[in-house]
Image 1 (tube, helix red, strand yellow):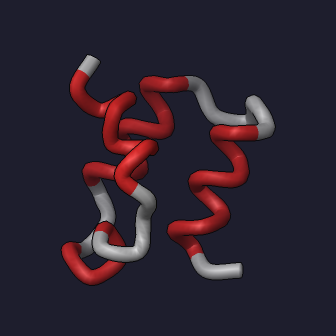
Image 2 (cartoon, helix red, strand yellow; image 1 turned 180 degrees about the vertical axis):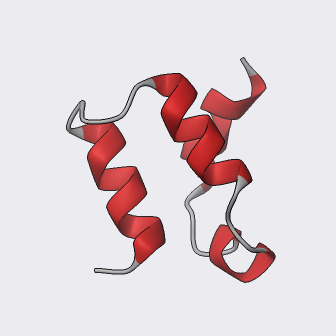
Image 3 (cartoon, rainbow, N blue to C red; image 1 turned 90 degrees about the vertical axis):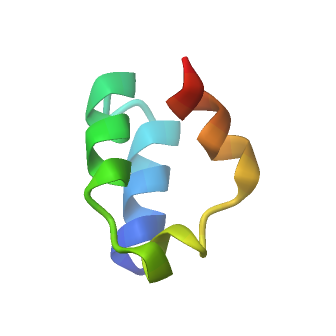
Length: 46
């Protein structure tokens, strides 16, 4: 499992708070961001 998928899985399983998830996502490279489903970006607009 890649780093991006691990971040998403940790968030889905409650091991990351929304704030931690957002910080992790903002720290990803552009190529890593392209692998994330659009539904997870909804949380970033809150």
